[in-house]
Image (cartoon, rainbow, N blue to C red; front, side):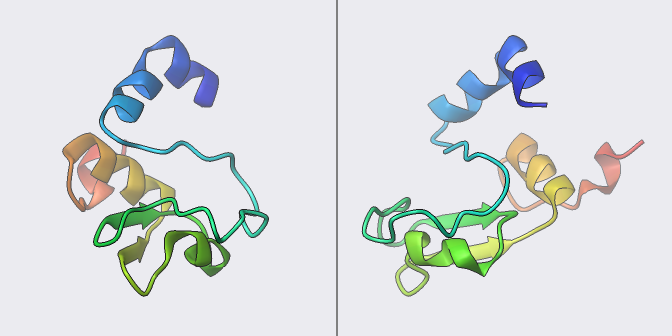
Length: 87
């Protein structure tokens, strides 16, 4: 999926819009002293709570969602029900 998104230029669009693309899998290895969000930012993530230390949940709004909801929300620019994108 990532390579396909690279070929289509989607990763560039997302990064230019401020997205941070992380590798799939366990994210508890992140250094919690390196913030991924500025104070007051919101994040929609597919990760489990082990990533929340790096996102500083005390200063930010963090929403956990399915990959489908996250993708639909990225396309729409706000929290979005993915039903209309599913075939």
